[in-house]
Image 1 (tube, helix red, strand yellow):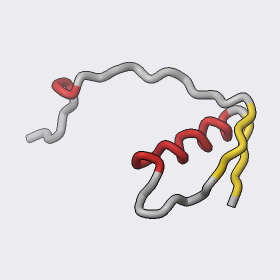
Image 2 (cartoon, rainbow, N blue to C red; image 1 turned 135 degrees about the horizontal axis):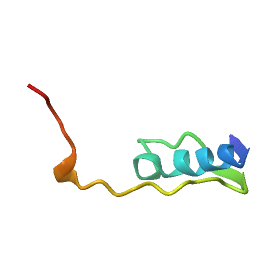
Image 3 (cartoon, rainbow, N blue to C red; image 1 turned 120 degrees about the vertical axis):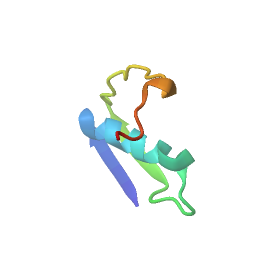
Length: 55
C-alpha cells in the first residue's frame, strides 16, 4: 500500500512512518509520497514537568 498526502496530510504520512520506531511488528505501509509536509515545531517539555497523577 502506498499512501500520499500534501501539506498537513504529508505531515501525517511522515509521522505514521516514524511511529513506534517505524514499525509495530509489521509496518502499515512500505512507502509514502509526501508533498510540502507541514510539521510545526513542538516545544520541549521536561519529563520532570509532566504530571502523571493528581490526588
